[in-house]
Length: 332
Length: 305
Image (tube, rainbow over all chains, first blue to last red; front, top):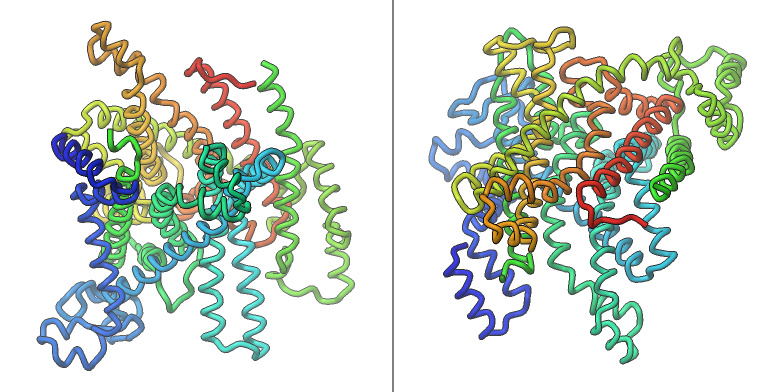
């Protein structure tokens, strides 16, 4: 942001008396790079959400030939195994002859969904935990934060493995007993993955929220609302939490790429998305498993990797831009 | 220093609590260590196996027996690798993981600190944009992406470096890069943030007002305080790196302890998991203590009561 822009932004902000969030939004739009990344993410979201419609046969008939030839569904098997990228298969095919392009689109969809929902799960746990610790203070605070300290020193992977293997075992048993259909079981596994990822990523959120609530708790507007007879719940949810939404949103945006990465790690272990479903992480893991000294199937690795990296880049730049915009020092 | 002595003494109950938590977690989960093996021929044999490993006792008694052994330096036998004790396996794998992790640590600090410092010193110029971009790029290429791409490109296509294993100095390069690159980006970002925050402080204005040149201000006055976020990140990072990484060890077939953390949790190999958890937690808590000591040395304004 240029000096002149900063000054004029400040002046107009004063004259229009904007709320801090509106000022942050204005600052964010001036950050072209972060806005471009936001645009990229919006386009990516559009493509992965519209893709099932685009790749249906009805649409394919209307499309020009060079486009419709490349439209496939992720679990469609063709006769060409390990075909390099061509006009038929834009990103090539894998060991079962499945089209990599459509698998990457579906994988990105799953990865982003897992990242977003996992971040929201950890948001709920972390905010409630941290707000409780910061607001109650004293002995409650030190006990709640000791729990966070202990959980920090326990490798999170053990937690996740125990949680997911337990869940998978129970679901498989229920399914073979005929109480669940296969589709229900797979959906439940999917939901379990969200919960597991969220359950190990809330610790930092709790620490951040606790620190913020601790400082806000002693401010005069809290005393004022208490004097007016507000209950604790009202003070916490109507007066304190709205004041830290900015920080929470920023951290949430940086949490999404972290959870996407964690899911790709779990997929590498075989605990993430279960085949034939795919995430970007499981696609990379599949590609890595095909590395051999005789033939190089570069398209199995390069395409999922570049989509993952560019998505993570955009998420990080977007989150950074938000953080700069919400930084109270940004006005100075 | 009584404060740090108190904290050091507090480590022991904390470690006990952590091991208890890990044990309870594994015990709560269904499945036992011998589920994947051939089922015992008779109930008699099954009972004999369980009695041998004390699996027939209530879980708290198993835990107390285990902790009693740990107090005497005995971490018990591994349930999965039955001819080895946990101490054996860790003693074999740990030096490899420590060597690899130590080098990745050196790489992340050696690249991250100068990169972050350089970007901050050129704030708002092209050097900053380039440095910050490189740092974010590094944060977006995890081991899972870097490792396979490096193996495919450098090792298989151009045949410059060995594909896997851990025998000669040339074998060290790819795993170290794979493991360290991501963290060098993290360190660079922290370093840049720390520098930018420090350059706003009044003692920097004072130093400039005294007429000191830029290099002296940045290196002698700012660096000491600006490096603090990196110092507090370095503690947990080193604990993480020294105990091995599953992806890197699995990808390059390196005989470290990182693979055991995952496999033993999957196999419900209780003594193995708890041994590793204790190792990790001891390193983490001990390093965090050291970080705080270093903190008060670097920033004399920090006082611990």
